[in-house]
Length: 79
Image (cartoon, rainbow, N blue to C red; front, side):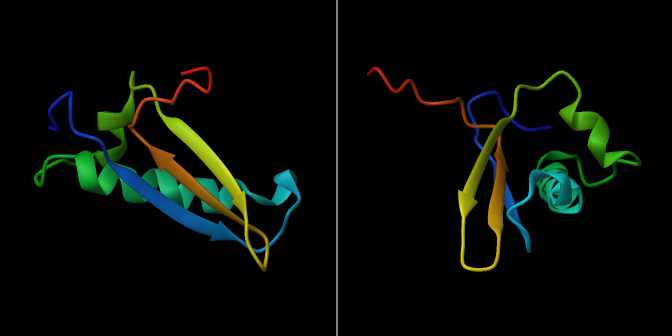
């Protein structure tokens, strides 16, 4: 499993700006993140995410939004 100080990130695109349509893209991003973190012999790659704080970033793009999920801590906007 990953070290606590390592940061991983994965993204996926949604073709809509409506949050009701983002489920599949969010699931793809979370799965891609789990694939990076999980041990190679893991039978349930998503188990490595249980109990972890994840950061979610949603940005507009030309067709909809890009959803990024990462293990990086959120940045403090006041600092």
